[in-house]
Amino acid sequence: MTLAVLAFAWLLGIAVASFSGADPAATLAAAGLLAVVSFALRPRFGTLALIAAGCVLVFAAGWRYETTVPEPSPIARFNEGDSVRLRAVVSDEGTDLKRAMEFFHRDHPAVRHQHDLKHKNALLLKKELEGDGRWGEFVKEANRTKLGTTQTSLAFLNPPGLKTKARYMNLDTLVSWGVRTLNYLDAGRTVADPAVDHRKVQEKLGWLRSYRQDLKRWSELLKVAQTTEKAVQGGVHPLICDELRPQLRRQAMTPAAQRMSRNILAFLKTQSSDMQADERLIGSSEVLESIIGRYKRLQSCHSKGGMTAMLLSIGAMIGQKTRLTIVNALQQIRTVDVHKWCQEHLGRTLQSQRRLVLRATKTG
Image (cartoon, rainbow, N blue to C red; front, side, top):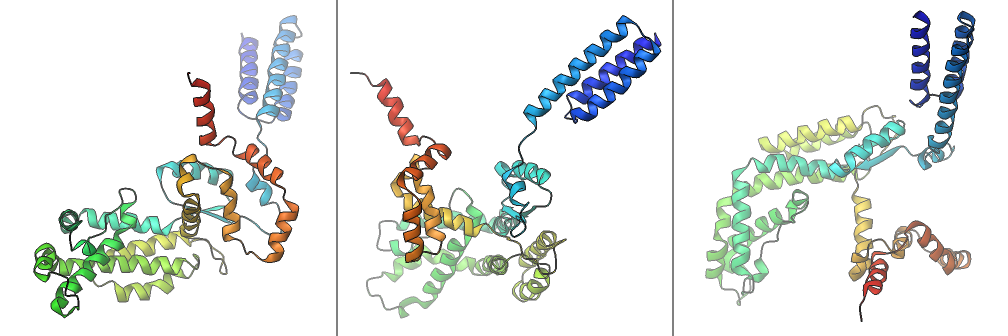
């Protein structure tokens, strides 16, 4: 009975070690030791059968190990160099990236995950304004005004619309419109434009006067956000909180702005923790988003086709171009090389897939 329990434990241990990602060499060594001990205790045919079963498991584990151990990632290979090392990756905390960044940091613990400050500011603004009933009323009034002045002589005073996606990242345009239009209302007939019906202006936009103090509060929140974003353009570093604190103290006069300032400083303190004294890390994805925006404008009407060979234009957009670099590029890279790269890395575009499928299903 004791031998049966030992044999069962032996096989179970080998199975667990074999299929849990353990190194086959260590598994084989453990199996060999257990086999010698088992056969010494009971030199029978049944013991040999158990040893044979254990060997099958070990060889199966070895085959699985060889076929499932991944190649070193490009990041790991890149960081093996001496001159340049990947130190940080910046992203927003969107649900589509959060889990991926957790896996990335697990596989590359030396690479820091920095959170985008602009998205963090948008979350803080959302927290402040969603609980502010006056903000909701202001947005409704602005939408109502837009409907009442579009295609009229007052269309030049139309308020901008908030984007459905990432609306709290574009509040500055609406608040700025409110402040500037209110200044225009205060100026009245001193503005030299005889074509404007000032009575109609007061009728359609006079409601802004009741939001004078609110616009000051909201402008202060946006000023705090803009100040921190400008500071982070130069990178996140260990002293960034010490540099920002006096500026934010001067700007944040209302409780909401002071609350937002404290939250931003706490966020930046976390982002700059455990950094080397002379180190600066990226803290915003604005540069990347700007590049993507330029790429989309370049694509223009072709943007619905997905990723195309136009993707390679990004290097030309952001790189330094001289006559020498252009000549070298034309001499070293052939058109056939570009086509080959696109086929290997991009595959068929959406437009080509659409043409292929519809041509195959086209009926006479």
